[in-house]
Each structure stands twice: as structure tokens, then as C-alpha cells.
Length: 393
Image (tube, rainbow, N blue to C red; front, side, top):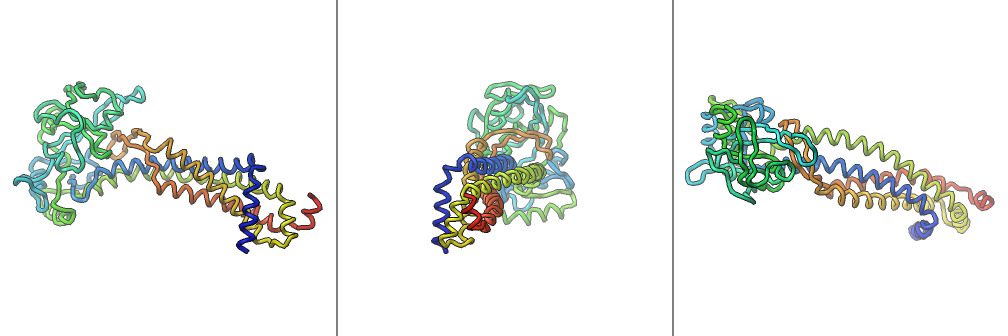
């Protein structure tokens, strides 16, 4: 039985050049489905990777209780000291690795179009780079505390105007000079501008208030004791999360929206591709009526004919999936864009990410299209009356 299935399948494939135009309809249809699927969802994957890439299990972020993001949080100076001195915080030379931070949104001109974008301007303490993982100055120098100096994320510099080393840019009533560029392993931090927190407090008249505190913990296991100590302290009413948890919640809304749009769009296109595959395989069965009848007359049963037709449809669909996946990877993977993160009301610069998991899902969808598109034509081929086919052809 297996030999018969392989023989008929090989015969079908050898005859594909005679049906090239019809077969290409199925291949192109499936390729378009996989291309759109991988292209749309690579946006969500890239956004999640950028957001969550800044997160770590041994770095904690503390906000005011009930805050959904740093923008609507608020902490006093005394509360930031309580956080910095809580149990579980790593210390270097007796000083806690903690950074009390202020977060505002400023307008910066985009390179790609003549429009302003909301960009995060973050006030940090000098220890902030040691608190975070993977942050390093790649050009210029660190800002000097007490001066209106900025260091800018590498992604922000590439996406927005006026952030080159040595440039001066005005926010509100103050002018700031770009003195350095930093990298952060491609994470969301690279979409931000950083300056001295006290200078930012003075420029925006925030007094001695902050919005968040980041701390480096002694280990990921120290988080439970750290969080418990703060939650039991009556002087502070905090929300305590690891950075990974925080950025995961920040990326959830936009990622869900993209998937809500992406999956139905893929399903609609897949329905069209199924009809393309049906048309291709029905044409294949019709053009091979004499071959099928002859094989049946020679003793080949209906089952090998059915299986060989489904295999042909499946192979055409998988070929389309490979083409669509390859085009998606070449066109979309690494493509840099920026979008508004609704959680923080600021732009996030990120790269599309066509991952192996997305390509695998695309190939599974292609296989499903091939199986459905080949099933009914295969049943027709298996039921084709031998005598009638020979008389007609």
C-alpha cells in the first residue's frame, strides 16, 4: 500500500509542470497568508521582546499603590529612602543599589515623518546604571549631576531628531545638552532620555517628589522578603513588582490588540487560500482523469489515489508556507518602528521579530490549508468511476 501511494504521489509531482499556472495559485495564496500572519504578529512579538528585555527578576520596581504605570505614581523622598534601605537590597561599599526616579513625557520630532512624538524623559540617580542590567554608555559620557545634560537611548537617537551627541534641545523653559548615548540590550530603556533626577525636579517644579524606585536585589529569591517588608511598613503604601512583571503588564494591552487584529485577518485570508487550493486540486484531478482511471484499471485502489492527492495539496501548501515565511523574515525581521504605548502614553521604539515560533505557526496554518484544500478533490479522485473516466477521455 505504501509503495502504491508513493508511486502515485511521485507521478503527480512529475506532472506538476503541466499544471504550473494552477498550482502557483495555491502556492501564492498560502504564501500570502503566512506572510501576513508572520508580519502582523512579528510586531507584537518585537514589542513584547523590547518591553520585557528591560526586565529582570533580581531588579524590583516600587510604585504607589494602585498605580498602573510610573506616570501616575508618586512617592515622597522619605518613602524612597525606606525602599532603598529595605531588607534584600544589594549594597556596594555600604550603599544600597537603588535609584529614585522621576518620569515625564516630552515632545520630540520624529525622523520618519513631520510630527512630534511623546518621548520619556527620565530623571535618575547616578546608581541607576548599576541597578539595571546591560546598560552601558556607547558614545560620549555620563551626564553630570546638577546640570541640564542628557544621555539618550540608542534607539531614540535613531528614531528622533535633535538627539545627536552635542545637540541642544528645549523642553519647556529649559534647554538640555546631549552628552552621551547609551545602549540597553535593545530593550525599552533605549527609547528613553535620561538626566539627573534633581535637575528634572527643578525644571518641572516637582519639589522633592518621585514616581518610582528601582532597586537591585541580592538575588531573585530576595524579592519575597523585600516585598513583604515594604507591604508591612505603615509609612509606605506600595505596589512592588519585579521589573519583568512590570514590563509584562505594560506590554500586555498593545500585544493583545495586535493579536486580536492579526488572527482574524489571518483566518479570513486562509479561507481565501483554501478556495485557491480547492480550485488547484480540482483542476489537477480533472486534468489527470485518464491517469487516475488507468491506475485504477491496473489495480490501484481508491485509497492510494486519495492519499496521493492530499499529499500533493499538502506539499504545495507547505511550499507556499516556506515562501511566505522566507519573505516575511527578509522584509519584516529587524524592521525598526515606533508606536505609542498606551500604558505610559509615550513612544516605544522596537524592531519587528519574526521568530522561529511564528514561522512554525505559519507552517502549521499552511499545512491546515493544504489538508482542507486537498480533501474534497481527493475524495472526488478516489470515487472517479473507472469506466466513465476512460470513455470520456
